[in-house]
Length: 247
Image 1 (cartoon, rainbow, N blue to C red):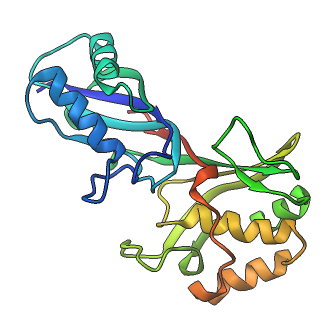
Image 2 (tube, helix red, strand yellow):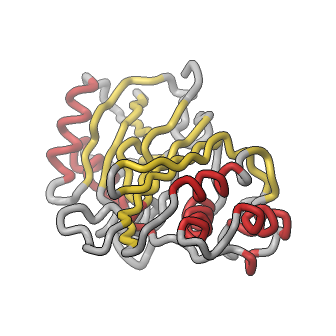
C-alpha cells in the first residue's frame, strides 16, 4: 500500500491531544476520520509526537497508508477538504518508502515555547503563556544551559510518564527575546512527558528572580519531581518540526 508522509499544523486548544482518547476529540482521530472519508475505509494515521491537550503544532509529521496510489497533492487537498471545520491543516504530503515511520524514524524533534511578558494579555494570539511581569531572558538563558546535554531528567518529567528511562540528551535549550515575547526553543531526539513544559516553568522562575541558575542545576541533580518548578501551561508550546536524517 502506498505510504505518505504528512506535515501538519494545528491549534491544539480544542483537542484532548494528538493521540486518540475516549474523553474527547484528538488530532489523530480528526485526521483518521478525514482519511476514511477520503478513501472509504478505516485508516490509521501515525504521528511523530504525542502532543498533550492544548499543545499546538506547525510541523507535526505523520504517516498514512492508502490502498490507491494518489498524487501527493490529491492526498493533501483531499484530507484538508474533509478536515473542515477542525483547526487542522495538512501543509504537505509526500510519497515515502514503506519503512518510513513518523515516530520511530525521527532523529530529532523541535519545540518552541512562547511567553508573552507584559501587563496586558494577548487579544489575538492564544498560542502563548501570558506572564504579566518582566522576565530576564538573560537569566533564563543561563539557567537553560544547565540543562543542555545528556542527563537523568526525572525532576522534569510527569509522574505518569511511561518512558522506560528518564535519561535524555537535550541538544538545545535556548532563550531569546523578540519584543514582548520570550521564546524558549528545545530540541532532542525524544522528550519525556511534560519535559519541555516542566523546564520552561522552572526557567520562568529564574526569569522572575525567584530561582538562580545554580538552583536549576541542583533541581536537575536531585532527580526528584518535587524539586521541579511550576509546569508551564500547554497554551505556549508548539511542535515546530521533526527531522529524519537522510530519510
